[in-house]
Length: 336
Image (cartoon, rainbow, N blue to C red):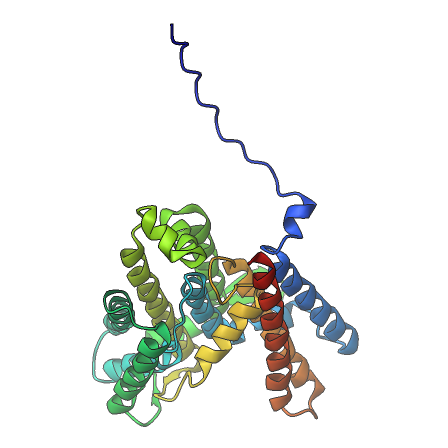
């Protein structure tokens, strides 16, 4: 006689132990949190008004475009890829929206077309990467030149966003306390980061991204939609870059074809400093937000210093990036 099958036991979830958090998977994020807290405390001790709501909210307002781009870049790097076109897409969408509205387009129609253009460029690059098995570095480098070329062909001059709707949006603020208000750009950054974190953690798409970055060959053998996910990743990155271009243009009141030059490097630095491994498979949107905050703290501290050249921010960021890259190499070598 055969015994009756025992019912399957439900899966249980246990909180990560201290040993788990100190494993290689979480060390980059923990290092990022320690660096961010240390820099913020040191700056708050040195500068009288650094530890204030106004300065803290300004971190998100001044770096909203970088943060939104970095969120999209997080998915790309998590999958083991790279996207060098995001800065050019930002400049392209900004000048496109400004030109269209100046020629009589409704702002919502102009913004919709700009977002569609960013998604189309991302979709095209993702498709080329997947179907032709080309290196993401080379494909997105071509996308960088293409988007910047489209931007400069539209206009070489800065064009103001003169429509009343743009002016109204630039003045939108959420008051959370007396004398403390959050501008629209900061809210957009936080909102995009929250939605992206939920997508990465709780959706099949997010799990597929981690699986592809961890081992693409194994993901194929498991039957995961690798090609479709790859294309969606670069489409998402293009959308985030276009959205960042719209947010940035509204915040400064104009569009310019040269906006976003070098922004792709800052976004990659924020993602890597935020604990995402360049080899893919390990990282988080939350870590990227902390990475953006680290860059913001460094820049703001040097502005408080006043007499120090802004180029020192690049030196400090470069040093931090090198440290985190070495840390990643040690972690991945230990894993191997």
